[in-house]
Image (cartoon, rainbow, N blue to C red):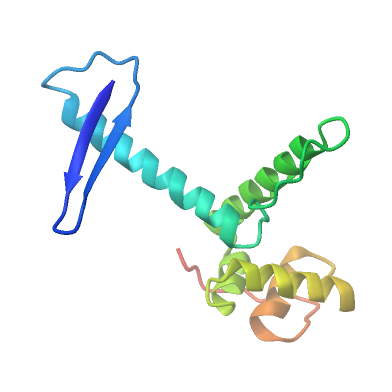
Length: 145
């Protein structure tokens, strides 16, 4: 087990990790830095899932024949697809930027467009969000990476 404390002017916070690594004076700092980084990533991920439209804060109960597990898998699958799109799709990036990087707003506009309009592709859907107009042929967007 590894334990560390961070002290600021306002408070002292204690962190603990259980590991199967051999902990010694040479690797303790790397283990603590890695543990803190992992904690930060996990906290940010769960914060995104709870507060940006993925409905992770809902308790679906056990449902019938593990329905809640299916809902959780679907939510995680949607999150994975969105992460891949955010990394690799310039139209998704531009549509998200058009919504001030607010995923909840992006999901709401996507739901609205699905209700009101036909989009032949995800690219057309994102183009509509970016520009406010439908278009049969998508122009090239500058690379934002």
